Length: 198
Image (cartoon, rainbow, N blue to C red):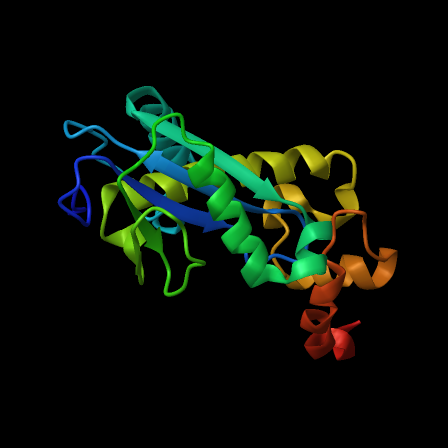
């Protein structure tokens, strides 16, 4: 069972990201503040939910949340500053975009770039706390929808199914067709292990 929040502060935001390990597309972060009576029985780490459950949870979160904000950092920006810094940047944008300023931040993961608001990084926090799980769901559903929309422009990469992650078919498509404007060029090293398969 997920816990309501990490701290004793009354207004705490959960923060998580989606898309760090992808070859294409942005890294997306969400920040969410939930009410004390928040109710979403199926809520869990977004990776543990089916697509249908994630969409249902997303609708409940957006309806019940006190505040939420979703931010993205482009593949081009990722290439400029690296994926770790881009993830921190997306998280800061999401936090700063909240219509209500939280008193504390609960961040999924083991590292975070310092913010003016007190915070704690929590390993696997999206499987422990409601608001981090909610942020996980919002970030993933937003990013998945974006990649599905881009798939209509670049169908050879099968983004509607792989969402930009380094599946074998995605790597083969890059080898055959080259990179799209949405690919992260600094992630080329992830292809090298499979060159013998082409």
